[in-house]
Each structure stands twice: as C-alpha cells, then as structure tokens.
Image 1 (tube, rainbow, N blue to C red):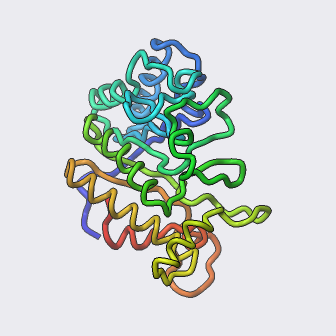
Image 2 (image 1 turned 180 degrees about the vertical axis):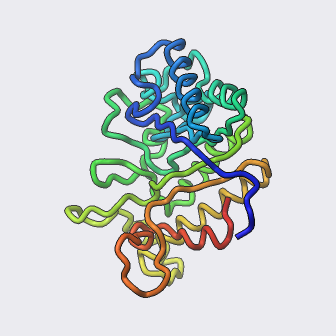
Length: 267
C-alpha cells in the first residue's frame, strides 16, 4: 500500500440516543456549545486529528437544513427551529484545534426507539411513507428504491456544498441486521419490480448491488462537488480471504460489498 501522508486518528461523537452529544435533549445553547468544546478538548488531549460527528442519526438534522427537520436528540422536539448550528460550531472549533471534521450520516435509518417525541410533518416518513420499511421494531428507507438513493444523496450533497467539511462518513447501517426471530426484510415489491424488468440476481446479491451502486454514485458526486472532501465508511464485518469459513467475517451476511468498495477506492 502507498505510504500515507498522515495517520488518521479519529474520535466518534454519537448523537443518536444522546450517547455523546448532547448529553440530554433539553440543554440550553450554551450548555450544548460547552459540551462540544469539552469533547473537542478531549480529542486534542488524546492526540486525535479527526472527529466523526453524527449529524443525521435518523432522517433528521443536527445542522441548519431546509430538507430535513431538526433532531429530537438536540431540541427535545423534532423540527423545532435551531437557535444555533451545531455542525458549523463543531467545524469551527475543530479547525481551530487543527482537527479534521467528518460529518457522519446514517443513510437509511429513519427511526430510533430512544426518541420519545412526535415525528415532524416534514420528516421523510411522513413525506414518503411508500419508501419506508419496518423491520425489527425500526424503520429504514428501502435501499432498492431509486427515490431513496436520490433523496439521501440530496441530503448529503446539500451538507457538502454548504459546510467546510473535511469528510463525509457512513457507518454500518445499510440493510438492517437479520433477526432470526423475524421474517425477511420486507422488500418483496421492489424485488419483484427488479425481476420483472429483467433482473437476474438472487435477492441477497441484488441487495448487495443496491448498496454498492449507491456508494459508488454518492462517492463520485461528493468528489465532483468538492474533490478535497474525503468519503469513508465503517461497515460491519470483513470479507473472507478465501472459501474457508473463518468466524467473524460477516460482510457477506450483512449485505455490504466491502471488498468492492476498497478495490474501487470509493472515498
């Protein structure tokens, strides 16, 4: 592998369920700013050179957005007008410390059990319920739907365009993890449409291709818009080096084409 110019030492800042920031959904602006500063000070003390800041945990926004509602985890009311922009504040504070900021998006997840309030009227589950699939007590956008892919790309590219990001990050939530106690992920209709249009792939390979196509397209669009913005993914599992059944290599089961992403240098 080519020698890298700089080691990536990143710290995650999770906002879903108020894991890292904010510590509660009803803090004042000054309390929220203080928490961001404290987290970034910690990153500096630990010699981190990047933070991965979760800005879209479930079809919502921890930044000023005309597309999606503000996050319940930030305001205690989804869709409430923001009094400040956490993403811009975090970018400015990160850069002041010589730390890169990667905006972390969950591309498909649109609900979370920890949210207790009402869903805003401009949330994607209200605007396009036809794209939403329910599985394992949660809701995600169907990755096979072109409108899903176009919508998520629109959200991500809007942030890339308007903010001084160093990177865009997706985590491991693509298709939901399979639950042995539940029926298969409910994408019968979209798979039937694929097959009726001449598609030849089995369902799981078709699902992998849906993820692969989306990742390839969004990577190219990010680079076209801002060539300096990095694109990274932290998918679950690793690929098998050969046909031996090595435990812990679950990339195949989680429908994430990791090796294809790496060999094509997506991001």
